Length: 400
Ligand code: KG4
Ligand code: ZN
Image 1: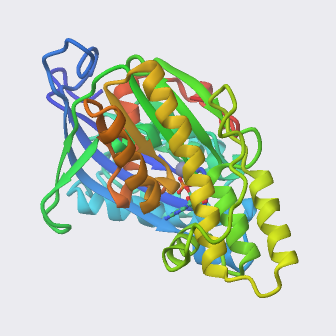
Image 2: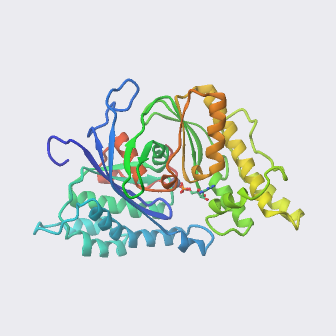
Image 3: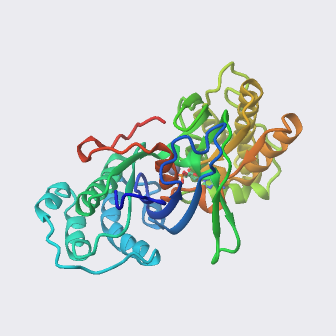
């Protein structure tokens, strides 16, 4: 920790769980959240975003119709160093070296499985003056383990080199917190604030790998009410998009096509919509689309897209509303890549207004629905769990 009287907590966050290489730097105050933002707390945490960079590998993986873990690992190795330099520069924290001695033996050991990254690290990072950063946050899971390890080992190397603690974070906690970043002003002169936390809070997390309804009773006090038993919502969008030849990742393309179709012309099943729990299942729906197209050679693709989207959204809305009526949360929030879906955003908003008008509805900024490191920084601030290097390990199946 730098200095005795910290006024801020400056967190550098790293996210490499899938096909986005991302680094963000943000200041938080008060320096330690403790009870800040909890029910009954007077202090409202503040954030200042210094840098938030996301580099997508989507084009590379598109050729293969999905994310190839080892290609993702290679790209993260190549991207992390230049992105870190850019993030430090943007944050005005980039300074070149003193004649400080660095112990490159330990760095070599930490990065022994990421030789390409090690080469860049030695060339560009060892020669930097340690920047004024108080902690390094890193996604430890869930995600693709080879990809996660690159970010984790990079974070460990920086933590060792700059003598700052590590905060491992769950990617899903990141998605959960993404709805709390409020962006004001224009894109160039954006000002950020943290929205007020109120518990209990219900989050619908919908991404390429997960579909979860989470009830929070406080920071870190998560309870997963339900989750998908097979495909995630985003995965279903991607698979159906592939059936319709819309490329990869198909979610956004499918949603665009759906806007031009009539969602009432075809009726697809709505799996588990009436089941007496908060679980989901989307793989049967994907099969239903496949059979429909097999049996209807001249099917209108726009209608297929619209009807599929309606089936997914109907299920997500029904379960979220049912959980909201049962647990009466003060806030309902969305997070994850599928939270970019306009239909889903609008429908939950409308239903909440009609049925539970006192509930605050929080949506992540469109730029924060997909994977990014800023959400990891926010989750790290509220988790505050510093860990020793040896304790931080990738966990592809980490739960919240
Ligand atoms: O959170 P995310 O960026 O990565 C994971 O952690 O998985 O989510 C990506 C997922 C992909 O499946 C993508 O197709 C889906 O989010 N997605 C959408 C939309 N935009 C992205 N799905 C439906 N409608 C969208 N507008
Ligand atoms: Zn994600």
